[in-house]
Image (cartoon, rainbow, N blue to C red; front, side, top):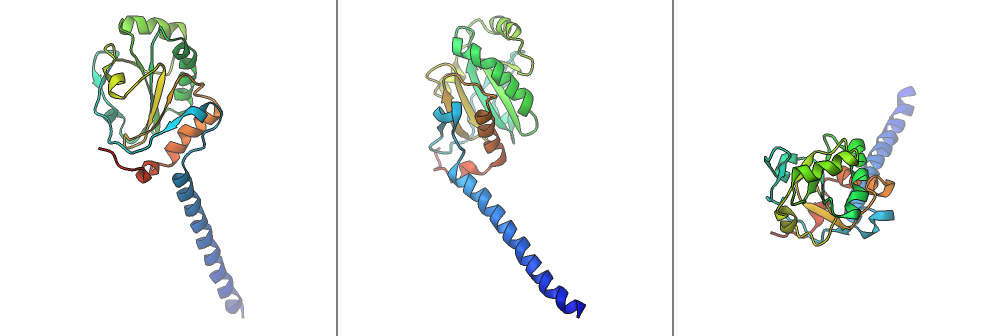
Length: 202
């Protein structure tokens, strides 16, 4: 009698578990299909219309070594272009530093690239004045990287997914540790296949 009562319960238990798994998969697929929620300061974030291969363009670190996005394989990367002569850049840089402090790690990193023609000495003066502690200094004195990526105004910030595909950009300053900005970054961390649905562009 006990066995007779247990089997239906076990059967329905499996059905419930499988149903829950199906719902979870549906929610994940729906999130990736619909894309991220653009709210608050991220309302002006421009989602990429197509999926392009990882850019091969390079910039330099503080020691003059060439760096490219390939160095950050398997991470979501926020690339920010800034300069000491750009007031909106100066205002947003501390928030980018805080974003790196809170999310930086195995899944995400910030690449903040100075395009100051004066190079490292000029950029370091501002970094010290703003007490930036969590960002690595990167340099692009000739603005080559910025031109290659199509930067039209300063500051401009790009987000690349774990495969190095651009998923969007924001032209202008923002508070990047605002809850809506953090939610946007986390969306791309949690949905690595988002760009799979975008049209391919060579």
